[in-house]
Amino acid sequence: MFEAGSGGTPPRGPIDDLRDAYRRVFESDDGRTVLGHLIMDCDFHKTSHREGDSHTTAFHEGHKQSVRNVLFMLSDLSDPKFAHDAITSFTRRYGPMAG
Image (cartoon, rainbow, N blue to C red; front, side, top):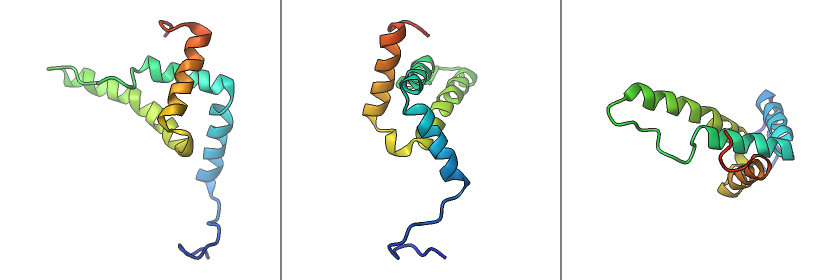
């Protein structure tokens, strides 16, 4: 049994295999392009709030949650530079207004 602080390696589980799959996909050039599109398409870096319209706000937050889930699975890659590189990859291929 693994004990925290023991210096050993914790056992791998299904979530580790899933994170590895996310990394294989999103570390590729095509994966970065797709992630850049997702970030731009859902206006990830903009506010979701729509004054007086809680349904639209919730709808936009739902879009962002999908990107948050991807970035969570890529946890060690989800620094601002990784997201910036993904957006850059997308805009190089398709232009800044594609979406």
